[in-house]
View 1 (tube, rainbow, N blue to C red):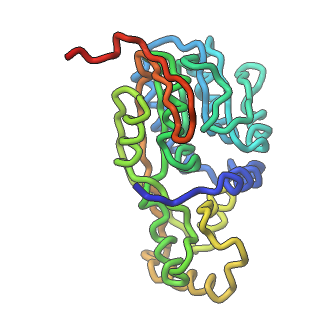
View 2 (cartoon, rainbow, N blue to C red):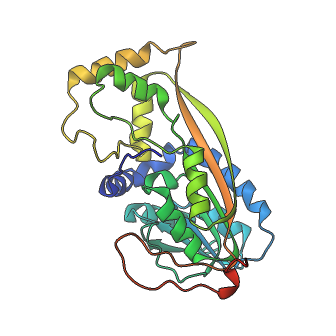
Length: 291
């Protein structure tokens, strides 16, 4: 598994700054959202509580509310400005609650959620196993998780261009691959995880157009080891020249590797002790394997 570290404050600030104009740039997020909503067809129940983790401006939350009109639907995001922007999608006919919270510490009781939805949020939450353990904690037995994340080939063209200009420091966040995510979901206690990967290519007139879109989405370099000072005009110019060399048919391209996951809540949640903590973990005796 990759050992890169994300800076959670940078993630929060980047998405907070992007909230006001986010929906002018979120075509990719809407496409992945549509695919994720299709996975919800596997869930045939009538949920009481549906939670949209990393809800952003609430487009996905509104779709969940429309799908299950009798359920209580909650939008959760780490960036308060995103939740303020979500107000426009939570009208009188389509209301949902908005809660500012970290996905790694959900303010929800154990086994309280029927459907947990997280579109392109997982990659901004650091190591996936603690996140998936939190998801497993709040899901009811038989509850359903539908999530998507970005894989390591995401923005590979931009990453290569920056490597040509400055190979000493990361300029693009790294992302986990499908195997790391699958292993983490299984280890966290999620039941029957199913993962798929796809690649979406977007095209632009110039590298600066891509950079403008990334800034508008809040997709900035959140690597904890990134250089926090100014990049420098010379390095930036070298990166642009390198990216230009990839131009084909008058356009430059950007690859997005999208990992989609669905899984079920465990029949019985087993509390896990984190390293360095003390306490008791209880579990039903019937879960013990017979010799």
